[in-house]
Image (cartoon, rainbow over all chains, first blue to last red):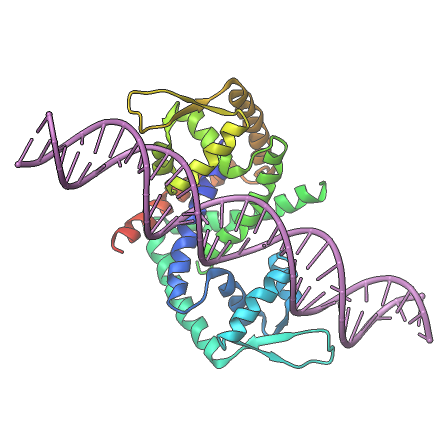
Length: 141
Length: 141
DNA sequence: ATCATTTAGTTACTCTGGGTAACTAAAAAG
DNA sequence: CTTTTTAGTTACCCAGAGTAACTAAATGAT
């Protein structure tokens, strides 16, 4: 199975480019969408929670959130711990989520149309397995 | 199958980071490896041939090749068309290819260890299908 | 043969996106 | 009450790629 990773990586740019094209209709990029998606599914969160979940550094999330606040897509709510910045989707954010979610689902449908359901499922479940294996590999540094 | 692309994309950074870590032992990055791999499998090529094959812009290949020439991994050979820059692997390049190929194959083996062969095969074959579908989608712009 | 067009490659500039280090302010631990 | 840890920000830097404008060489067309 030589070249598995190569095939995987070759697909990245076309996919991310297509998604960013789709997102640009809403003034955001895919990396910002990740934050919107997180807030929709996990509810109001701190920046560290988002960073940990998606395995990126804190400054990365600071930047994404700043952009989304400027766009009125997320807003800060106050909690007890004054160090924390808790954010949640605004109404605008909820609407954008729904619209983009619909677009992505349609796109996914189109690009997987000729792939049998059970094959999709297998590929779908392989990704997190590989991710776990990579994490274990990192732990042995 | 909502969230297929999300899972796919979530795997990108861990994979590319691990690969670049591996490549750094040889002084190159994954994007430069693509050129080495191309030359090994397709033989001496022009920059445009490489760019077309991997669907990136010409300046991107100019940069990658410049770096590889500095490292003595590829060299220019002369052809009839004086506009073209035909490059091929040097002996150093051939050795680096073999060493890295071995490392990648071992890495692939480790991160796919607990995934049954037939599942790997299905996932492996899905990538180019999705790529094709995306290309068709682009053509309808 | 000569002039216009196409092609290969380079250069300069810009953008996206992320990481690291150093810092502040607040909370937790001792 | 002092020390340590935690959340977030800022400043700086890097990888990697795209676009536009350009040069030089080859092709095509009259």
